[in-house]
Length: 381
Image (cartoon, rainbow, N blue to C red):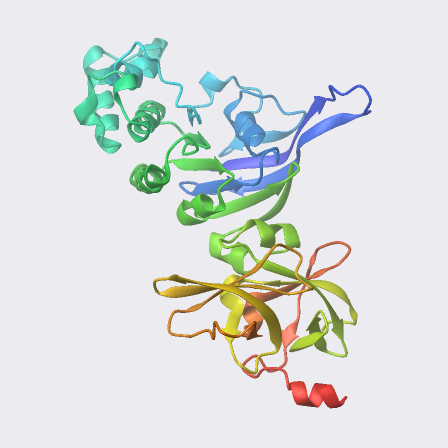
């Protein structure tokens, strides 16, 4: 089922009487969700991602715009007529019903031509339970299940009617770290097996990037960027997207471009072309640092954390816009911990620069990406 959002907008009355105007929760959202894909809606709290999900489900009515399932306009249809399955953050299971009864509940409410016999309902319930691997616990009540098992029951209940679209609203937020990992893998497996178009809302960028075919990054009701997870990570369109994606997060410095050279603070770090002289923010991914005793960027060494195959170097720089620099280097690269300083060269394809005013991405070409800046030549200029 293809889902098309056309100029989708949701505004609410402003409850603060001192501020005029309306609150815009979703602002002109345009997107076509391909059939059978898992799409992640990603952004901080209050960015409009859950509101978007509620609009698609029919729990909220849009102020403007249309929602289409394939070529059918469902904007005015009630939730029960849209053929969607919804999984909430708090599971929303009926505590007095068994797992079997919880899963069966949507089927018991079917009317008219859609009404099923008891045997048909039993078959569908068992198939849904098997899909989420919960068939051993059919006679238990929710209180006797773990958080991960309860979430699987909620997913089975959403899938039992074979929905046209599956909507997941932060379904992993109440699980511990290990269960989150296991359950997100299960969600991806289930989505692939069923082929149902799925929209997954989360504020956790690692979750979204790990299971989504495409991600939609949102901020204050507006779409910032849409694309495949790795593409959005490698090619952010603005500073917000660059900072929101990545663990550890991108390191952001104040810098400038002068005469074809990119500076961080007063240090020339890359020869670049295609950018006029200006003040910029310089974003460097943690994996974009190359340890070098003669490196272009000099930082004050704080700590070295060994993480198995990688080493995390914690350091500081006066031009840093943040608390500390985190550089991820191979474990075989040894840092001289007796020194107060550590020096790096930068991988050009892991460096992004942004306009100081608009924070929009500025694209550049590294003249010699495999050769570090000639510091001696620059010092003589």
